[in-house]
Amino acid sequence: MNSPISQTLIVTVVLLLIPTSSASSPPTLEDSFTQCLTVFKPSDPNLPIQNFTYTQQNPNFLTVLNNYVRNLRYFNSTTRKPVAIVAVAHVTHIQSTINCAKKLGLQLRIRSGGHDYDGMSYLSTVDFIILDMFNLRSIEIDPKLDTAWVQSGATLGEIYYNVANKTNNLRGFPAGICPGLGAGGHFSGGGYGNMMRKYGLSIDNIIDAKIIDANARVLDRSSMGEDLFWALRGGGAASFCVVLAWKIKLVPVPEKVTVFNVETVGNRGGVTTTDLTAKWQEIADKIDKDLFIRLTLSTSNKTVKASFMGMFLGNSEKLLEIMNTKFPEITLNKTECIEMKWIESVLFWLSIPPGTAPISVMLNRIPQKQIYLKRKSDYVQKPISKPGLESIFKILLKNENVSMAWNPYGGRMSEIAATETAFPHRAGNMFKIQYSSNWFVSGEAAANDCLSQTERVFDAMIPYVSKNPREAFLNYRDVDIGKSLSSTYEESKVYGVKYFKNNFERLVQVKTRVDPDNFFWYEQSIPVHFSRR
Image (cartoon, rainbow, N blue to C red; front, side):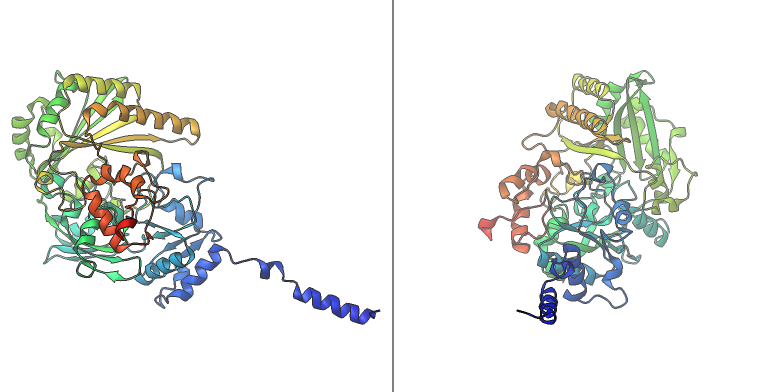
């Protein structure tokens, strides 16, 4: 029989041998990831990566996540949150994040400005990390060479503002009209704006790039090879690598540009909206390439409203001469023409009246309000007849929450071959359509109503838009046109040919070569063709 002392010793030994809950619990993914970041690859000693890593336990996690969410549909209590956000501030942070995500089997989402319409830069169905680029925003301009190195986290507003300041307002860059867009995603999807008829897309004016590939190597155009550089321009860089910076070619802009916005409800000077729209179709892609006229169709008081918003790279006298010759039906008059510096026109396209806000407002990164939204896209290659236009107007009147922006092509866009970059929508396209629906209240009822309206308008446009495939614009991300949940070539081809047409096959070849393990994957990424590895 054991003595009380021996029994006590036995109990003590047994207790010591039983692991405590903290010792027995495996480390969480958060813990494993943050530990890996500090061990896997040393960061710059002046910029410790821990200071830029936000796990769900960090009190600032939701703020950092929400700062670059631009669609409230994807920010709620049920939305899957990332294991961590790494707000990278140095190239070694990107390398460490890639290495640790690979080691732990975590997916990576790369976010520059958060304007991915369907949230693919900050959403996933499995455990993932957000690589947030907003701290990498340097802009280095060489006015003598008319070039600039722009980091992916820089916004268009920051680029425009700095380019104008460094070049005495004599240079600009062809990109989007929303100054909050991040350069990383905007450029890699094409990057269109109101100078595209003169200078093409952003990607047509990109001459180099610095990237980090799936093996965490830092490469430039020379070391990455021309195939990958081709793919990055219009093919969506997030399928291939992380773009650290782009080298852009600045373009000349006149001392003064002329802008206007003519709105008409029902008719203008006796000319119906139908006739004005028909005439716009006739001239918008063929008119002087210095002139860009966007037509927006919406509804107002049970009537279709048309807005003809334009920018001319020149003075009002020359603009009126062109308009009176090519588009006299709109009766544009001198009082509707506003001459201003190119940099000032950025605010005009935001519907900010001249002189009511400082130019520096385009540097604001965080919007004053967030909205729920849905966007879709189409391409039109043949004129829509007047009966067809009337039918479209009737559909809009039945779905009043949907508007359409018709953006003209032609000019420089028709001069660049469809295979020059990964962006294929060139000659043969008259204009691109963006379908827009916004709502401001949460809940399934409001969302379902607006989404249904958008889908009805989209379906009604089938007779008038491109076919086989029905083309789509990558930067107007739309999961409705297809997505891949198992990374197969067959699934990916459904949306791939819509975004990239015949360029899809070359993109697959590049992907298979540079990222054979498919590390850079998301629901609409370019697939690896396993039979070709």
